Image (cartoon, rainbow, N blue to C red; front, side, top):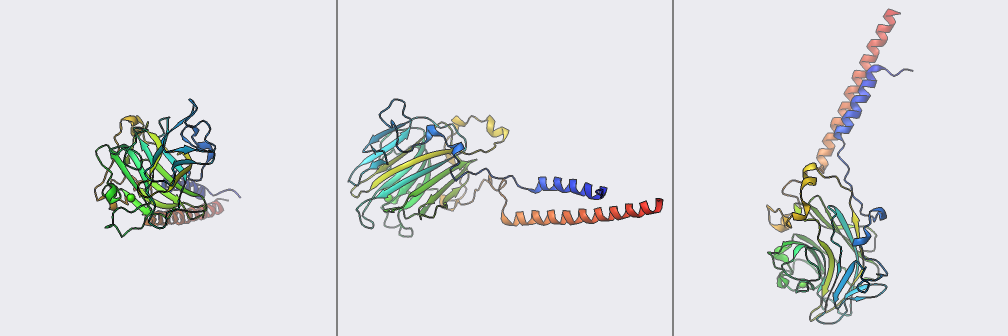
Length: 340
Ligand SMILES: [Ca+2]
């Protein structure tokens, strides 16, 4: 019953092979692991002390109304602007923000607006024309645009979710629904739902992913996934909304920030992440930027056929080792017979 030496060697070889071949597991937590919830960057019911207590970690501005059940950035009234901002800068390199929201109003199809935005920016509480926040902002914005301004853009339906990264030099063009500066987006029917609707924004290792859960199925659907995005640490999370001639209630129910446990290279760790200027490395036009043109992610995530090839190699390795092992074992048995 002793394990033949040949097979033992093969076993060790296999272990080594496996260690070399198995790709590193991506550290994703999208299902709200409470262990990694960062309370100082999260806004949850009943919003204790928001805006009134000096110890509150959230400030609000404009038409924003805080109740125990929701934070209403704008009511369903014309020409309103409101925002809510985290007072604590975020120093996490890898994070995921889950936003529960509710956009609702009496406006019939296409007669409602304008939408809301979720921000990760250098400045906070700076009112302006971009869904209630300043233009030429510095940082990241995710827009949930509920009103189509650009009648030439009939190839997409509204509401439309899009992402934009700005170093302060770009202006958001409302007349074109931000299309000239958008990095990616998707149509999302988010209005007047009688169930909960969610948006998730993940930033990790230069990759920006936006997911939505708006069909009452309790699962995330991908909306935006782009690489080559550079954002610093030390910026602020916020949300804002605006109405114009058309209106809607724009409610934030919760904003929950989760830390993603991701390892960085020594080179990455030595960088001063507070000094990074928001940017996106685009070799193609923004709209084609589905794959990361810099190849940052291709090296860590294996595509289907590569995984297949690796598995095939591993399988071949196992077969070769087994055969060699069996032969060695048999030879040794024969030798043993001869000697005894
Ligand atoms: Ca619009």
